[in-house]
Image (cartoon, rainbow, N blue to C red):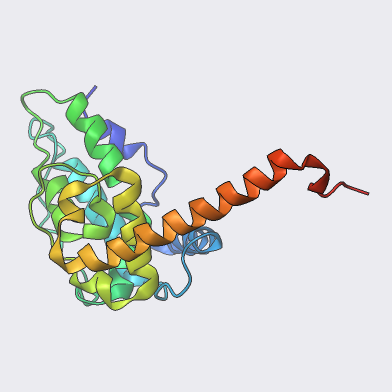
Length: 205
């Protein structure tokens, strides 16, 4: 099976139309349930563009497919330096590392992942964990506290060491690691109390 088929199976909404807009608003609401506070507002045109860009990039991964016509997708209509743009694009592209990994695992000689890799380089929040991308511009992510925390948590969860070595995020990442350690110490302290004195566990009435 061609690797592009993996990507087409993603739950991301197709580009354009009221159904896509409604789906993206639902994804935005779901993400905010357990996301860091202070995330930017949804930029719907940016999210719709990301859906179209993903579909276009997937179609271009198979150069032997006669239906693959380079359409020259326009640039993102929103400010690429704005935190809201990166947040909204990520609603569609957040699974890009997993899609790329699956596509690379199934790759054959005719597969061209360049379009997907170009998206990964352009949108650093969505490409944490993608190996071999080289330097990325995380500047827009540093302008919003919620977006920065989301970015740092992904770096830690996916153990993306090149991103962790970025001087632009190094100090913020060290602070986030300290927060995780403090939280872990608190959890362990409660655990020790419970182990020593199980009668202190609240009982349902």
